Image (cartoon, rainbow, N blue to C red; front, side):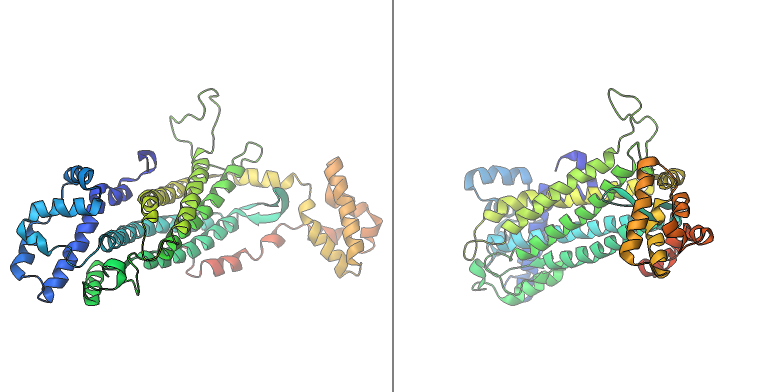
Length: 435
């Protein structure tokens, strides 16, 4: 991934050296397991542990000749270790090292992603409670519907983030798998106990049964989970983009001192962070699609998945990490305009209470079809003439025979629409308000 979208903490997990270190971690764990069984002399293990290292530049040089990155890696390690290197990679095949090392990298990346998820959840929780009672217009199809609160909108995002946290944890567990079963997965030249010991040391779960590779349904689950999470973040971003439109201006991304919005128009304050998040979500959906394509391989193994994973492994984790912290920073500093929210709500001249009038008329005995016709007839006059809805209803004989002016006044009560917000928050936040 380009540096623009790479945070140093995550980028460090996906350097070439980090990949080779994961491979070396696997090889050393295998040597220790073999030594524990007496299959490697103790003095050889001591030498291996003391000297084992690699040189990425040297690996690249060797690979130019041998055209095989694992062999090039093992050759470089052997140059550091010396004669005892003959005990390294005993009974293993390349995929044992590559797949288990990949599992290590994904596990380590997942742990960092969970930190990003925690920051996002905290930002959403704080914002939801801050605006629990900030009334705004609820919209369907982009059109004014009925009142909600901004805190309720954010609480919906938080509940989704909670589910995504569970999805991410499950996906990390799924992909934190290791395999040391040798060529075509039969353990012909290495005992299954070695695999179990290595995975235990590395904090991975042994693949129950493997071919010559770990089954890629695990990886597809991981990358598709990242795509789902990215979709949830995009959902937030798209909402902020709408709320920042000049005609709406109910919320706005932070605009820092010295920031410039347009090279041509000095007045511009654009939702660039949200738009960026929308674009990055598209990348993660693309990576998810590629991971699905990797599930079906020929027989016990081919390497059609390898080129894909060399790209999507680092890129998906780096992009997801970046998205977590970008959206969290945005939400932590989001500018909210409650007065504009109320002004926009009042543009409807009372139309937001149409359903309540409809229900009141039916409760008084009017047939629903007739009540709908009467309320809609008055509502259309509001749309066309910008008249006051309550005034029109009071002057309508079909309405007044069922509802008095006092009845209508009670129906046009904003608090009616927000009376259950506390109950909703109790369900979303059973732990209560954050301290």
